Amino acid sequence: MTTTPTAPLNSQPTAPQIDNIRGVVLMALAFALFSVCDMQAKLLTGEFHPVQIVWTRQLALLAGVVVALGVHGPGLFRSRHPALQVVRGLLVVASAASFISAIRFVPLADAVAVTFIAPFIVTILSARLLGEHVSWQRWMAVAVGFLGAMIVIRPGMGVMHPAMLLIVVAATCFALRQVLSRRLAASDRTITTVAYTAIVSVATLSLPLFLFWQSPETGRQWALLGGMALTAALGEWLVIRALEIGQAVVLAPIHYSMMIWATFWGWLIFDDLPDGWTVTGTAVIMITGLYILRGERSGNRLFSFGKLSSKR
Image (cartoon, rainbow, N blue to C red):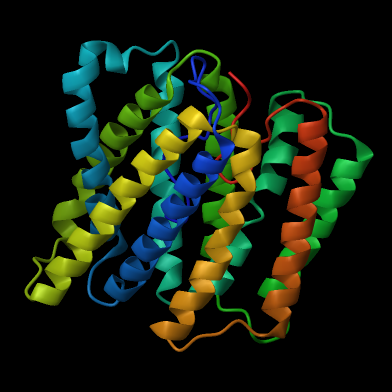
């Protein structure tokens, strides 16, 4: 998904003095930039194939990795689990491509609301794959959260666009990559994960790119493609910087600001406003998500919320 950063939201093992206020500001700016990235991507979906759009976004990330390589050297790619890094990169491609394909047909606010089910999927996967204990209260929160998603999607009521299923696929792939982030956080640096993600995603998307490539022909197209790549890259940098100075458990709820921005861009650019069902369902999802995060915080653990991974 492009509504969230590529970098896992891990606390840094050697973080400087904590400054949560500054971290919150940087994280809020990051998600504002990601919302601009999504808005530009939606404008481009009628003119370019999703493969080309996602490739362009990831190319900017790769450029940042090249710069980081000059600073950190070849050690940047040192990973104890390179195979898992590759799988995570492929999941990034799958989630982003699914999301971009869907927002051509689905309002941004509706799409963003459904992506908020990812933390609930992470809870299920963590219990099944990582053997984590999940209390009955959290299982209840997961059930209520999925109910909120059903309120937004409204299957069987004649209003659900089939593209909504792609949003669910995107959220599921995102959740899977977050589970991998938990595993990788114990051994690999955040910058290493970002580097693998950039290389794997660009390499994977480059294979079919020639089938879908369309050269930009207007200044508007160049501006949108360049702006999308730039806002994505800046957002990634702000996320990493925010997590260097702030606590991930404090910064995690900022992810929900995406709904405000998605609603704003939907109103300003696309003449779309969420209806009462979407607002109600989103509220249910957000409240239950915050409840789960609160439980994780009181247990002194970091929950994979938005892009959150376990404490390193």
